[in-house]
Structure formats: C-alpha cells, structure tokens
Length: 370
Image 1 (tube, one colour):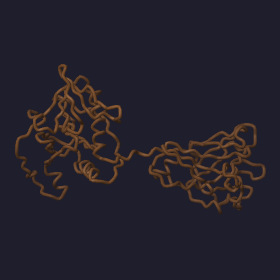
Image 2 (tube, helix red, strand yellow; image 1 turned 180 degrees about the horizontal axis):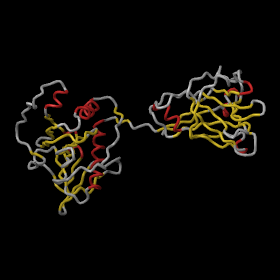
Image 3 (spheres, one colour; image 1 turned 180 degrees about the vertical axis):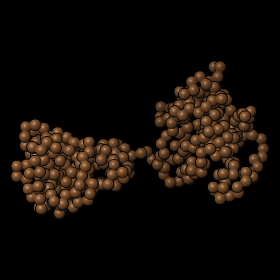
Image 4 (cartoon, helix red, strand yellow; image 1 turned 90 degrees about the vertical axis):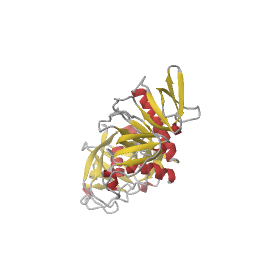
C-alpha cells in the first residue's frame, strides 16, 4: 500500500461583505456566517499527482482549525466545484458553481488548533477515473449562524498547511506472464475442488505415454516457501497421482457436467514487456467467445468445441453456449488450434474451413461426446 501527501497552496475564500474583493492573500479561509465577512465560502484548487491507479483506497482532506464561533458543532460540507475558477482572482460575485457531496465534518471547540480530517474518497476517485471533472472543492457551513476558520499556506507554518492524503494499492506487476498463468491455473484448481467435491476428474498432461490421470483432486500442494500450490494431488482408491502445473494440458470434468458460473479468475495483471507477455496476451485477444475450434495440446491431446471463456492463461472449451462439458486448457501447453471460417475471415485469411491437416495419432478428451 502506498501513501502520498498532496499540498494545497491554491486556496482562498469569498465573502458577501467584500463581494468584489479577492482574498487569496489571507492566511486563513472562512466557511460559514461571520459577523464581519457575512456569508463566507472556502475554495480550493487541488492538483492531483500522476498516480499508477485510477482508484484510491482512501483520500482525506486535512485542515487546521484556528477559530470556530458558536457553542453547537458547525457542520462543514464538502462541495464539488462544477466550473473553473482562479483562486488568485475569484470574488464572491464571480465564484464558481458547486454542488454538495456526502462528505463533511462537524467542527467542535475540541478541534481548535488541531488538524481535522475529512473523508473525500468518492470525490477524488471520480476525479481519478474521469467521471467527475476536477474543478476543485468548496467548503460551506450549512447552519447559517457559525463560522469556521481554517489556515492556508500563507500562515507560514507548514504543519498547519492544508493537505490531501491519498492511500492506494498498486496492482502487482508480474515479471513473468508464464508464472501468472500457473497462478491462474492454481486458482482454478482450488475452486474446482470446492465446487465439485468428491468428483472424479481427468487431468491430461504433456507426456507421450500418459493421456490422462483420473482421480478426485484433494490438494494443491505448496511448499513452505511457495505463495501458491503447484502440485495437483489426485486420489483414486488409495493411490495418489501428483501432477505439476506446468505439465497440465487440460482438465475435464465428468460427461454431462455444466460449467459453474461462480468460478472466478484472477484480474488482468500488469505484465513486464517480454516474449511471455506477447504470448499470453495474444492467446487471450485472438479468440472471440463462441469460436468453433479444435485445440491441440501436449503431444496427443485434442478438444473440439467452442471457446466458452477466454481468460489470461486459460482457454475454456465447451460443447455449446450453455457450458456443457467444460474443458479447462492452460494456453502455455497449447500446440495448435484449428478454427472455422468466422474467425479466419476476421483475420483476413481464407473464409473456408481451416485446411490444416493434423497428422499422427491423438487422444480426444471426449471421443464419444455428441
């Protein structure tokens, strides 16, 4: 998690008693109803730094309170400014339009000479994702009787300067797209064990002699030094079969199984540039859903159906759009795919059925399916 503090030097307030005066040189800014300045509104332009995210976990506006009138708490409302303004020239008569947000705080006597924090996370996230134009913030006091006075940078005491604190989480950057594919596969197997308990599955491998290992997945073993399991353990009548993730070409469930829509996949990661990123992202981007295809994997394995889902690192094939007989295929061990006319036409090649001839013996994952 990262944290950054943004200084807010571009501040002022406007006063109905001085309707044509710019007050940006003041060391303080008023929000509320004052005996001398009458109706007062605080204005702040906030320039956000360039962040590696478009969403922060939290954003707090930090303000030092110098004065507060009245005995009752003073309700300070954070408003979204909806038109541009220049803090060095704006006056009460020329102040920008604004609209209230759900953010705010009640200022009491106990807040005097202290820093108060106002949660402005929804507004800042709107600025970051572009759904809200960043024209700044206006602070108002809705009680019509009290005024709260905050400090500005002009006070010359840095601990009392107004600031914005941002906390955000940077998405992980995978130095290897291949490693991410293994983690995606581990994530899938973990869910299959939960969603299909006591179900005999078939795990196909890259080996020439072993077409498939049948059993009930019972564990995804991870060493004490590992971040996730990399050895899939299946059991069948007291015997265990152990398959490393890098050797898996396909996982098939019993005939008649329908894909469980509650299965989730790891979010799109940030990959460092490289050949493995090129490969994994190309597999993901090449195949539209419902593409009829035959996928060849390892040395002897093939699956014919439609592309039911296409996730980074995984191609999920099925018999039809209902997800009947899903087969989960890690793209890192795919050796060839033949497709029907629709995809070929989109890629600017022949519009006939693929002329590819796959010669030699092969093992179909579901040779008898209709």
